[in-house]
Every structure is written in structure tokens, then in C-alpha cells.
Length: 486
DNA sequence: ATGTCC
Image (tube, rainbow, N blue to C red; front, side, top):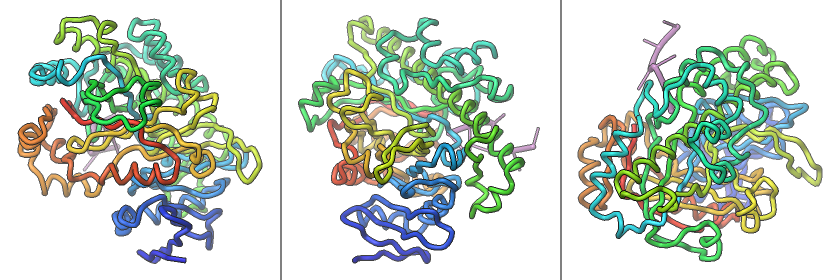
């Protein structure tokens, strides 16, 4: 058996692209990294593997902790990590969900082709930039009072439907139809709600963006048809989360859990893994608050999509219905969810924590919207501004290997600080426009430097690992046309 | 990711 050694952690190669940290010491289970050798190499020098190993000490963790091919270090728990934790005997960990609760992406189709759009890029990118607020702090397409925020927290995309920012079809193409019914606005602090008031329909900063893309390849024409994707078609990818509201929910509950459950905390190798024991009052209220923040993020992406439809109507002089601007799907990248999984022949209720990973349910699962159920759910994997993105289809092996999950992006190879030292935003922007015909407009040049194509791993390789393992199969590839970001 | 330090 081949082994890989780094930072006093030894990984054993189970088979191609599957590496295991065997169970030792206080680990409750082994841990697995799904990666090619070169992807493994990229995380060997940082804290990713140690964090993954630490995760297995969470009480009630089932089978193994998993790290996706795009994984990298995060707050306590790796970004790209998946942990299925027993919902009765285990725990719920905010750090294993992430600060940006329901950070995620949605893709909207159009019937425009790249040819239809050529020449309009400068106007389109300008209009989008003026219409969809981005960057740090307040400012949203909508600004509402606290009561409205509470309705959004309780009802998710249903609120948007009733308020005229969504149509029925949008709702059906979100996970959980855009509403976690376990949400309780009362579990969310006033401070969190106040932060949300001015951020309904906003992108935020960091790796969040709105990107107009063209489909360059459809690898599976049958599933491509089911997803409504064909070469040269224009699509829009929206990447944002729950903004300050979700961040505040995470902060509030990390504080509360650290204060109330110090015994569990002291048994863990890293305070950043702080968790509420399953069945405790705090586990219940964090779950209710997290679900509420998830609903807020869905509404955020919905309102951004609504505004995008209006911008296209303005720029192209046709109605959005006429341009068939329909939601393909919306996926969450950061969440915990009660799911039923087969573990060694036994059906168990688990809090599946996915942080920087995507649910990737295959054909037949009832959670997959009816229109896609015969083929499996769409999975959206943003790459970088210079490499483009992928649409995958949930793979059969995901249910046995990864608690029904796959990767969520390309994953960073260098820190934001390092990126700003290596690149200058203006240069990156000019180069993308001159060499790749990608029009970028950002709130700050620093963000462009931080998001330069070269700060990301090779998205092709991430997707190749997903495909090789059968957890998510590539259906189509897209390339950016216009991008706006914080 | 984040009113990037109350």
C-alpha cells in the first residue's frame, strides 16, 4: 500500500484518488481525502489535514470525515469537508457549517447565444454593476424593516414569491423549494436581523460574484437536454450567501456554545470546532437559526436573480420570459441538514455538515426536483474568472462514499494576502479582457487581485477526481463573459 | 466569508 506522509500525518492510499488517515488516539473514525496526488500535495503544507483529523473527534461522527478534492483549511473544519454526525447521540457544530451560512450558487439559463450578446458586454457589465450592490457593508437591491426580515427568515423563497420577486418555477428549482421549514426567526438575534435589513439582494465580497457565462461544452447531451443546456448558450451564475446576517448567527452561537458546553469543548482538539450536543437546547436553537439564515441566503440569491432579469430586459429590450431566463438550480455550499443515510447497512439520521461542498444526490432521490429526478440533481462548481465553471450531475457513488456530496469549487492555492502581493487588480482585469474577452467590474481592485485566476486550483482536476470517483459527473462547462464582484 | 478589532 502506498502512503503519503506530511506534517506528522500519514495517509494510506485506499485506491486511486482516495487517501485515508487511519483511526488512532482520540479519533472516533478514520478520515478520508478525495484527491489526486497533486491536489493532495497542495494541501500538505497547511492545516487542512490536521483539521480534517480533528473533525473525527466530534462525538457521533459516522463512518469517516471526508475532504473533497478542492479542500483547504478553514475555521476549525476544512473548507471542502463533509461530516455526517448522529442527530441523536452526536452534535451540531457551527464551525463545520461555516460563517457564511448557505453560501451557495444558482445558475439561470437564457435562450440568448454568445453571438446575441457580443458587443453588449461593456453595457451589460456596467448595468449589472450599478444594479446589484456588491462589496462589504450595507446596500441591497431591497432594504426592508426587521419584520420583513423575520418573514424572509421564516418563509424563504416563498416570501419572494408572495412579494413578486419570484415565480413558482424558481421555487421548485431550489433545494427544499427554497424554504427550510425548521427555521425559527426567534432563534436569530436582533443584531443579526438588523444586519440583514439592508443586504437583501447583495453580493458581498471575497469570492462572491455575478457572472454572465457562455456554455462552451456539453459532455452529456441527454442530461444536458434535461438541464436545458446547449453550447454557445448564455447562462448567469450567482454566487453569494447570507451576508452579515449569517455571519452574526454563526458568531452568536459559537459564543453561546463555548459558554454553555465547555465540557464538550474541552474534549475537542480545537476550540474552533465548538459543538452543541444533539438534543440540547442550543443544538435546537442553532439549527433553527441556521435554517433561518439559509432561508435568508436563498432570498438573497433570488432577489439578485430577479434584478438580473430586469437588467437583461433593459439591455436587450425583451422580457425575461421571452429570453427564457429560468432558474436551472440553486445549490448550497455551506449547511448542516438532517438527512437519512445508510451507514454499514443501517439507516441513520445524521446532521450532514457540508462546508464548502455540495449536495450531489443521484437519480431517484426524492429530494431531487421532479424535473431532474430521472438523471440526478445539478451540481454547480464555479472555477475561476480565467478557467470557467462546471455543471455536474449527482453521481450514484456519492450516496455510499460522501454522504451524497461532491466538491464546490476550485479551491484556493494561496492566501488573499499573498495574492495581493503577487497581483495587481488592474493588470488582472486588463489581461482578462484583452486575452480572454472577459469583462470584469469590481468594487475594489484588491478583490480582483485576490480572485485572480492563478490563486485557484485547476478546476478541471477537481472535476476529474469527482468524475473518477462517480460522486458527480460533468455535464457541461462554461466560460465567463462578464463578471461583477465585491 | 465578515460593518476584516468593542
